[in-house]
Length: 466
Image (tube, rainbow, N blue to C red):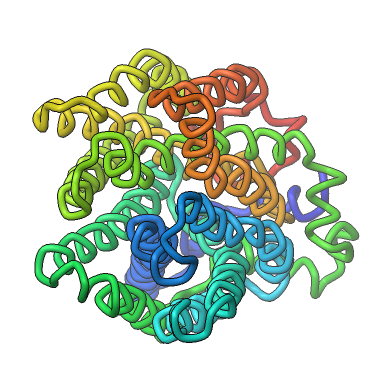
């Protein structure tokens, strides 16, 4: 156990509490600042998931605008969306290092600025008819910048919320990040549906979609002053103090190297949990409108309305799953959700492809519930796998690599599988296989720390019972 971890094990403030010698007014101010910071941090996921969701919700329109309306153009557009995800691990390594070195708050501010630039850029670039192939090139470049910037977002926010919450409440606190990601998706699909039903098809295809990216850029810009008001977590403050006093030689190394050398099991568990979270979120919620358009031939406005149903259901149920993981434990919650996934994904997709509108609504809602539940539990469980010295860096690796492989690539893989096999249930089969393969080892390897204090979580994992 490092000297920093020994310090956190005996530090009464290690769970984020105010020092015992503080006055009642100081404690109240500290508590207000902590809650304000947690609220701002949780709100940040709205912007991140709006950014990535809106691209997939208007994928068919972007196909016509930037790549020509050819037979395989939709696959190309989904590939561009996936390209943004490929840059997430690179952003994760850079921002993970910054998060463990210069602070969680400063890193999230930089990320918000880059997100604003990428979304505003997409909103103003000319289309294929105007500048030809360069339209696609610019789109790819800006999506890669977006992917790089959000390498810090969800991981940094989960770390911040987990380190700021009290013991026994981390599941509920971190689940708000997951819930707000659904708010971002809802804002994306809701604004998309509103424009699709307000504007003509020609207006939506020519300029209406650009308003959606302008809205995202405005939200990202607003995050900069809000995040400037956030207060750093106690864990990072102790890291800074330990680095100044040279009490831990591990702090002289790169946090990324420390995570790889000292916490490889935690990185693997973060990857496995996040793989299921990514494939379930992107295929059970984000990809649903595109699937309904392609398979059931539902108009864009109707598919976006069903996507709105999925987002609303996810927002409502997410905090309850976070609360349940605090009460009953993280592993039992994941085990139950795995069983639900295995037995419901394929039947739910069958309902989506049917002719019944009522069946489609039921299928959309049933797909969203376990996907939202998994994200809620994972929001606290993944950062709890790491100790404080390299939590941001280690989590950023595991989470973002999984998001690339099973998030950004999942819609592309699902569409390709349907195209090559002719099986409309191919996305559901693919998701079920990933969930089983990643889920079984997760239940054996993960440590369940929901009942532990932050000091115990930050202690050497080999000395703390799971």
